[in-house]
Image: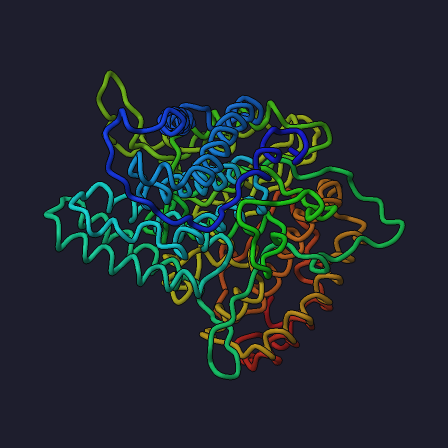
Length: 587
């Protein structure tokens, strides 16, 4: 979806935060209040009620499908625009006649921030994250919620705590890690004050929020350090110059990645706000770097001319622990609305479900698959309990479940202990189809890290972070990191040439290669496969990534040129002893 085909940008330009006016306090009876001022209060109450009504209605909109929600969002933004401008223009009257509190202004600003965040979730355009950040940031800078703690109303304090949690999510997505740490400290103090003042039942829940975000911030296994040992925040979104260009005259497909389902259902993985660390990483791997992040964002404005020529991100659905029926509904909606010459990507980060026995005929439902959520499956008003091992099969996404969707170009990534079930795919309709499959088994030392995210997804998100992690490095100096990244750019170019020049490679890989996001994922997949094959800890064949269709190994993951590059990178990072220096030893 573009910026021009929605009523939202027109409303967006109006949403600006202006300085606070002074207050006047006058005590008069209602009859003494001039008619104009009474009308101002009445109009404000109407806009406030209308805005709340529309905002609450957002919950009832279907989460899938691209079109139904746009006009509703447009109406909601229009009302909030009017409300915001109205309270700015009539602040003195509203202060004196209505008793407008600063926290109420903060509440409106917080709702506008939420609207922008949800608009980002609907469109996947990272520019809207900047808009949400502007409003959340203004609330904090202007201490809109400051007085809340002086009022004896726990529900107001909860509004403030929820604001902090939402602000933290937006900062995480914008990689503003330094600010996240400050906000977590402030939230921690607010929670402590809240639980001491009010005898509440939700103390444990709020402490869990703190633990989750702290674990999320610490999830990256390797940190990049400046000379003064301060941590450098690195971004792994797609940036200009990071994707190897196609060689001149190279014939690849014209397909474009349009839709992605990012599914997270791993037990015990670090998460925050229904976003596991694997989902968070894949989400960023499928986005371009947001514009104007280094500048101070203009509060509530994004002029069209600030939008660079190329801003399209694939649209994403984020599904945390979906049931089978939810997953299938979203898949069907995505499939139905997929434009011509477009690709649907399905990313599955989930616990493996293994078959209970072997039948004579092994079809697409006989190898197990990955787990979907059982908690919300209800029969006759009762939650279904697992009665025996075979019951698991009901809550499993089998390879066969995806077969109907191979009628259009499909790109599947499976990160699971039973990823190999998806090797048994069949291309029934002759459309481009590729599955990238994680290792099924990791060496014990690597397995211990799994709570902080999967190594396979880490390679697809940031190959250098994953490579450093699997080599046991906890930190890398900034200068060395930048040299290694520059070296990797050359490696990626070589991998790209290996894929496009191979005479035996399946055409499906080349058909996806024209899209920058998919090209980068394929190149990172080949790098991951080659690196793990050379690593001395990875000895079992099940510890290597696989793909459907299979890649020609000699041309790609076992290429002597690529092996030479990996050893050079290992030498650069001073971890060459962890790798076989004679590739013949590997086999």
